[in-house]
Image 1: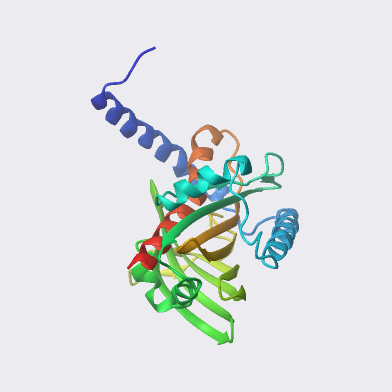
Image 2 (image 1 turned 90 degrees about the horizontal axis):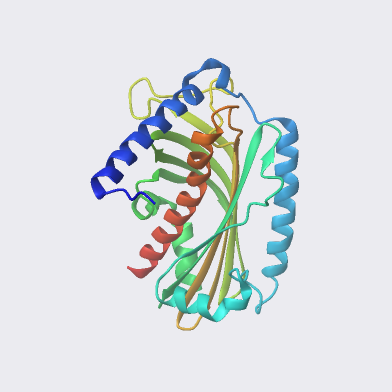
Length: 281
């Protein structure tokens, strides 16, 4: 088998990025690739999938002994907890093998689990509710964050986020967020996107939100579910993200699918790791 020297590997990486970028350009720029809104059938399928996810989470959040989902494989739970207490993150893809490709869209479902020694459920809730500090704790992905309205444990919030994977995309995202707790040691939050707008020329005098006929469908829906359990001298945290993006144009799957599928995982892992770092300070 031929092995690449380190210099060859770097060259291959540069060439690979160039190939992906050249393949992405029609996806980004060509008028025929713009998708105004997610197809109604895809939205219906996404909503149905979300209902199943939220039903399962509601059951978990009523049980002290099953508040967090078992890390796959469940048969190695002791090994998984050892890894978590060493500071490792465990990230799992939950996207079903069938049904990920919806009519004109793609579904992405990931879960990440982590442990922070010395942290408490109350610490977690304070962190999640402190939106003014999001640009500090979750930089460089979160550029701006603010609460629009709040009533007890339910609030509406707005965040400007940036995703950079070969190309850079900036979006204004609005969320309906609910916080809840089973007891002092078990808490959760449910965040559902209500509006996502792609921003053209962010930070420039010509900055504007693209209208529905100009957006590219990088992200149509994003729901995020946090669960935390205080035990073993620290805090176990789980985050699940379920997102909906546009489908991949015919003929570009070989280059674009790995790119599109990497974004949800990397974003979830970044968010979880950033939360851990914030709780350790």
